[in-house]
Image (tube, rainbow over all chains, first blue to last red; front, side, top):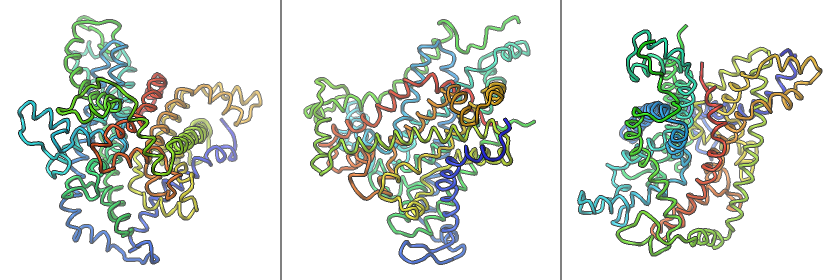
Length: 294
Length: 290
């Protein structure tokens, strides 16, 4: 449609203005602040790369706990949740309509619970005394004799976070994959059968995945975002920042720790920038895997 | 065609091949559903069952005491629960409504109008799909302080209005509206605003429903604003109140109340999704990133 310059500008203006102010500008400010020693009281002074150098060389908590935790958590929950989404979507696509819809709802609904309000559910289940549900079950089965303080024992925090993360990983991306599989072109499968595709597994590898690469990419991006957005889960489960023994500390918590508890905003901004770069890296890998090469 | 038995997708009837899928999926479905059923039961348990030892999974004598206790707790702290509910509803309705309008307008421009930088703008938005708001909480705080909206209701609303996912999905959907329809309306003398209202909006209803759901999910459970941008207790939202209950130390006593609060946070999401799920699936079919 030919409209001249006025209309595209008018239609884009409201969204564009909010997008710039609340998405682009914060990123620019974060990058800017990361080169300063801003502490909210004095005006920020330029310190060059000091924050980044300190992050890499002095911040032992970051190197020892936060970074490894973040990498472990995001590598398992990101790709793991993604594969789970795909396999579940693929499996339920082969069922009749009514059970498929019900199961899709069952797998999707945990992702609706995200947000810290749901932490209470896990707190009750993993409660550390013998009235805690998991403890009661394990004790009645005779697996353990003493109740385990799940959420205050460093060893268990990260695994619990990963389970909760995977439990709620079937979100929008899962729906996109399901829709992609449902709308596949039947003729391709017929042609595939002629070319010698024998079983469902081969169908999945040679036909389903290649034909729905765009949905796969969208779902991958959503998986990355979900994983990092849920980064505060350790703090909401244990109820403290830092988490006990830093065992559930992820980068988002580290940012809050420095930004809002110690008011070292410049340093916190440097951590934010590193986090944004890591996210960027993840999505680059996803695009490499799923972009159509033509 | 010999040997081709169909692709097995969306079968019209039940056959033996589906049994093994059920065998694998059902235990998994129970695992996924377990925490939700649990919280549902817990919210309706009377005190005797909450403290029962060994703890029971199911509720035997359901009661609403937890829900009334929850509003009493709020009243005791000086702010009636209805205030939190009202704040949440107000913020959520505004975010859903305004969010949808601005995303559909932008989607219309990006999909159907021709202008310089159109593709660049769309790919910037696409890159912003992986924007993680938690990473830029501090800059956002500084910006809102600069705009003078800290401690006002705007602090809940403004950060959530521009949702890249919503624009992305709606734009993909608008791409499917035939250009001929728009040309025809244009020749009949309709202005772009008229075309937007009378042609685009009615035709992209499934995408609108999806946009509303996504905005609702974001907004209804949004606690960052109450935690960081708002000081006045009476301007905070229900999501915030639910988290304060969850973080309270008297975990055993408050369990029933916390479960009730969690349920209240969860149920609207679920109902809305069940109600709109057909539209969502319809939109998702266009969700690919090329």
